[in-house]
Length: 96
Image (tube, rainbow, N blue to C red; front, side, top):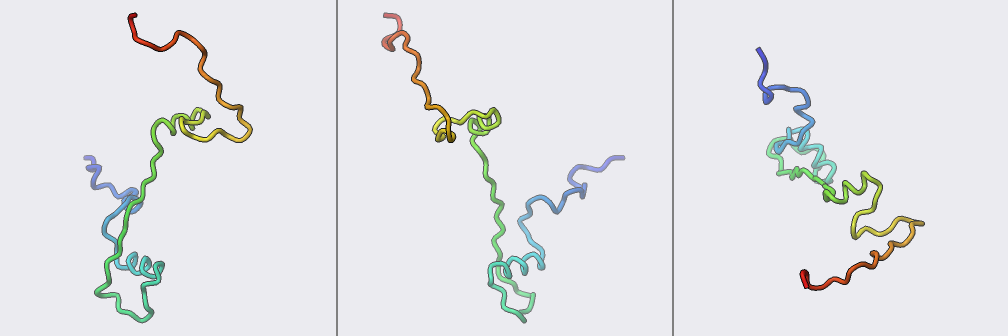
């Protein structure tokens, strides 16, 4: 018989949780310097616990993986300036 994936405990505490334990709330208050020594651990103030996610745009992430700077990114140190597009047919009305 197998366990449902929601019941597995592997990495359960590693993921983001919205509710903190009392000791986690006390340590967060100490880091924010909002915890006076000698205070009781009952009736604690609320502690904001936000998950911060920083994502790269897909194009920038793909370009970074290939080693090519993304559009709008400043050129790397010592890189040659970008060349102008090759001269071809003038852009105008199509089909004329």
